Length: 275
Image (cartoon, rainbow, N blue to C red; front, top):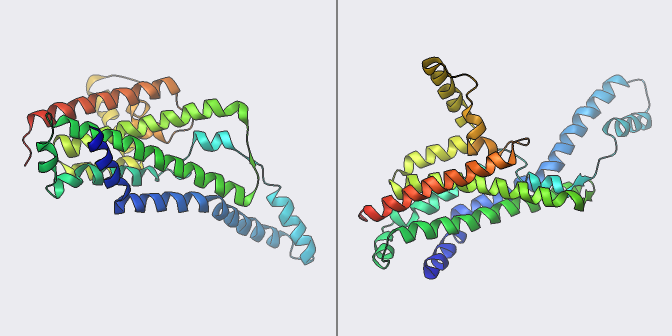
């Protein structure tokens, strides 16, 4: 198992898809606050100039500064609790999961790997453990990028009292991301459906699965006359990007999804011949 883990870690962290995901997440996170500040300054500056055409340039500058106001210090706890500054950033992590999960199957190397293991399920488990690490690394990349971004445009305040709760929230988001990864691992390794896994990753990463949940909710309510049904409240992809979700419920959803789909993947891997 240790050899599998070392091999998988080397494969994922040296892959092109990891490099792409890392760069996109880092650059987007660092650029977020300066870009937002520049856009706000342009909009407010235009509004101020229109309202103060008769005033001098110095008066317009003073009015602009007053309209923008002093930038509040960003709290480290808020950044830790929500590392994804843009909701589509998890998409690149999910695409990496699909690419990595199917990598050895696509190039035929899985035959050599599986042939050296007493149980083929060990390959699937080792992939999941590697995905756990890579997901954590990319989430920390987003977090660090945000800290740098906020520091560029203003101050960063370390509110030590709120950090433990923020770390817990960060861990819950990591758990929800692992739940989605377990689903994608089942689609790629368990049943070998890479196209379906890619579609699922894109829909989950962009938030469009919410529309499907809404359709399912409506159909169930009309057919079974069940009221107040909302799959969104129990979907890991929706909970991942929400800011006011219930922590315990999200933990239960994350653990359940991961356990169910990893169990299915392990059972399927042991019963399926490697092609």
